[in-house]
Length: 122
Image (cartoon, rainbow, N blue to C red):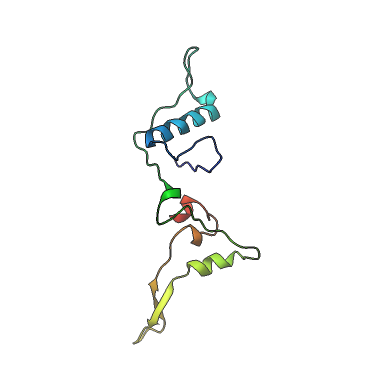
């Protein structure tokens, strides 16, 4: 299960422990899928806790600083393929003409359909 949390939502990450964030997400999911959650008259509906959880702190990550790709007005779909295209090194010598890529790019900025998402970063 992958959960995206945006500022202004009902779940806050800042200042919360991983356990508190997971618990808050489970409460939101229990409300969303209340018909699938078993509850009794005296008990608030709840979901089983995950066996593992990874809570990222993207907004405070010194390498990300909450940055994400955004296209400007006038950008074309092919621009993202251009941005993500590998850079070739010097032309090959010998029988094969052409270049071998020297630098490959990865990340959500290269994903045309999944920009601005964790899935696009993969």
